[in-house]
Image 1: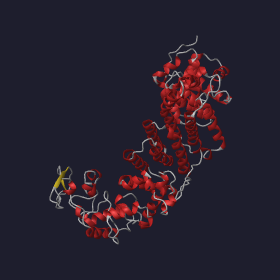
Image 2: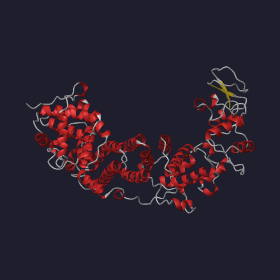
Image 3: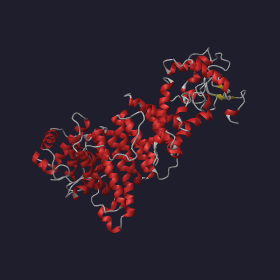
Image 4: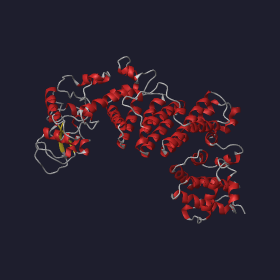
Length: 577
C-alpha cells in the first residue's frame, strides 16, 4: 500500500527531532510521526485558500509563508524542524512544506496542481487543460502558485509571466513552419512540437522553464540574472535528455543549452563554462556533426539577442535566422572567411566537406564573436574545447567518405594532421613546423594554435584561460616529445615567445613564460636581438609582427633569472654546441 492510500490512523516513522503529534513539546527523539492523509475536499480547500489570499498584501514571500503557518496553527509561528530543508525532503510530495501533525490544515506548496480560484469550482484537470490549450485569456493567475516558481509579487506580474512563457517557449523550441503568433491567435496548434508538449506534460520541466522565463523578463528590465537560474536551466535540459526521444535530431537536444549559454554570458564566466561544457559532452555523446552547424547558427543568434539585451516582451524571431555576417563587423567577417579557406586547404570537394566547411566557418565566427563582440574569453575557450571534442567525428567522416587515393590530400586524416589542416593558418613552407606540432599532444597543439591565432593573427588578446592552460600543458612530461629533433629548441622558442607576448603584464603566467624563454635563449646561444628575430620569422604568424614586440620580449627575457625546480621545463633534446 502506498503512503498516499494509507488510512489516517496509519503512520510512518521518519528520523527527526521536534514536536509530537499532539502539538505539545517533547524531548528530541530519534523519530517523529508523519501522518499521510488525502487532500481535503474542494470546499475545505477553497475556504482555506481564501484565508491565505487575504494576506496577499504582505510585502514578501517569506511573510506570506509565515502567514500560512499561523493560519494553519496559530500556536506555532516559528520555523519548525519539519519546515527545514532536510526534513522537507523526507515528506510526501503532497505534504511538502507542511509541519508534522498539521497536514489536513495545510495547502500543498509543491506537487499536484490545485484550483486556487474561489470564484471557480473547476477541477485541477480542467485548469491544466486550459493551460494546455494555450488559450491565455482563460488562464487563472493562481493556477501556478503551488509551484512557488515566482516571488509572487502580485497576480498581474504572475499573469504576464505566464503569457510571456507561452509566447516564448515555441520560439525557443520551434519546429518547421511553426508560427508562434498564429498559434496564439488560435490559427495553429503548438501541440505538434514535442518539446513544447513536454513543457505542458511534465510539471518539473515546466517549473524550471518558468523560472527561466521569469529571469528573461528580469533581463529585459536590466536586472541581473542569478546563477540559480542557470541551475534550473541545466535541470530542464536534463529532463529533456531523459524524457525526449529525439534520435538524430541533435539540434533539438542541445539548442536549450545554447540558449542557456547565451544567458550565461550575461551572468558570468562560470555559467558560460558550465553550459558550453554540457554542449561539448552532448556533441561527443551523440556524434551529431551534420546538425552542429545549425546549432551554432542558432547559438550565435541567441548570444546576440541575450548579451546585447534586445529582448522584448513578446520576442519574434525570423523563420530564417540571420547569417553570421550580420552579427560581425565586415573586418571580422572577412577574417572568418579567410581562416575557413585556409582551414579547408587540401580537402577534396564533396558534400561531406561542404558540411565541414560550414561548421568550421561558424566555429571561427563564433570564436571571433565571443572574443571581440561579447568579451567572453571563457566562452571562446569553451568553443575551442568544443572544436577539439568533435574533431574525432570529422576524422571518422573523412575515413568513411574519402577514397583511399585521396587520403594523402588530408595527410592520412590522423588527429594531429587534421588539427593542423583545419585550424593552423600556417601559410607556405611550414611542413617542418607542422611536423613538429604533430609530435606533441593534440590538446597542446590545439591550444597553442588558438592562442597564436587570437593574439598574433587576429590581433586579439588571447585571454588568461588560453595562456594558463597552455602553461599547464607545457609543464607535462610529453613536452619531451617536442625536443627530439635538432630544430626543436627553436620551435620551443617560438611557442614560448607567443605565450609570453600574449600574456598580460604583471600576471604570473607572463613571468613563467619569460623565465622559460630566457633559459631557451641561453641553450640556443642566441647572441643578439636580430638573431632572435631571425629565428622567430621562420615560423607562422610572425612575419608581419611588429619589431616592438620582439624588442619588448627580448629585453624582458634577457633579464630573467634561470628557472629552477618545478618551474623548469624538462629540456632533454639535443643541445647545440
